[in-house]
Image (cartoon, rainbow, N blue to C red; front, side):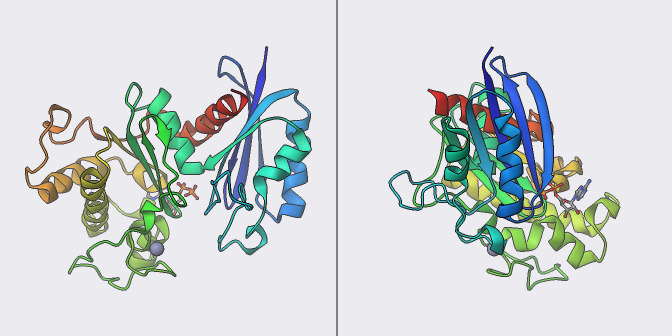
Length: 292
Ligand code: ADP
Ligand code: ZN
């Protein structure tokens, strides 16, 4: 049996797992994200206990994903200062001496959803997580999109609602980008309590669904994904899905026609098929690809 390491590198915690060649999870560990000097040796020690065929990493970013770049595999401009300009990929390559696949956490999640989850059998999907931040991964023609850097769809600008009591937004870079208006911390700042304490009839959710609908409509017009998958803590409020679908339809105003979207986007804007395991499953798929 061959074994594969998978790392979901997050700003608050590192989730490590080992899968066998059938994709069955065989071991798992979680470490807090401290400094690289503290946390990386713990992780390489953990993975070193297994005779891994390859490792896959889905990481918080921004990242340098260009193999031709001298800083390929680095975490770049992150506000987490200890990790800024940190060569995450080479740290694992050098310690473990196995092939290492590397991508953003959300591209990994999008890949897993496209191969095994809500977009299984499709070549194109957008995965967006609405949690502490808003991040999006895009798979086109079966591959995660990198482009110049990689998509940062959480930071697209949205039109601010006239009903919004926090019209200035919450993103330190852009104020009223999607993350600044719709991430968990924006909800909490606007209403004084976290989203999970707000009842379904609270005006927070009309606003939230309006901003997420803007993203969905813009993404449909820009990338034409075959499925939009919305995950993350905020989307635990499942009543948001019909609200977002309805408002997305309203924004599109009948302009886009396709059998896959003619039932009010019911099968088009959906939760992750892999639940909260999309990112980790994606890291495992990156390991499989790195081995090939
Ligand atoms: P992270 O983005 O850090 O990986 P999560 O996806 O769990 O983690 O997102 C955490 C954010 O989501 C917090 O701002 C939290 O308030 C919000 N959140 C978590 N659960 C819920 C919920 N059930 N309803 C609304 N907001 C939630
Ligand atoms: Zn922003």
